[in-house]
Image 1: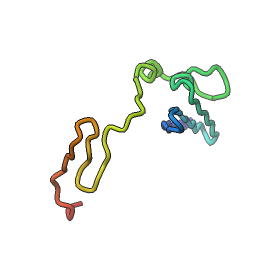
Image 2: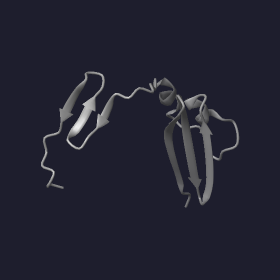
Image 3: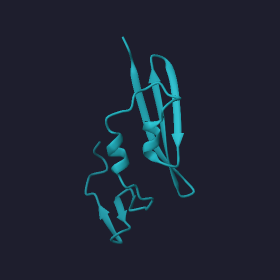
Amino acid sequence: MLTKLRKSYITNSSGTMYLSSTEYLDGFHYASSNGADLGAVYQESGGTAYEPEAFTELLEAINYQNILKFFPTAEGFYDYENSEYIYQYKDHFDK
């Protein structure tokens, strides 16, 4: 039986967003990273052992902005766009 797993995450370094992708295919491990174009990772012609995925166009269509929009706090979060606190009314004793 063939086992395939992919993990992708986006990181930020000095104003540049990097997409890192790791492929696990039947015990083999393939990793790639790209900071120039987020969609280019999925369109590489070599160096990986996977086929281009169906969501490549969706990834390229998303306009990522490196702007902090909210900050989580213990009570809720702070919205930087509207300069206001938004509280979550929940009992902290409930799990």
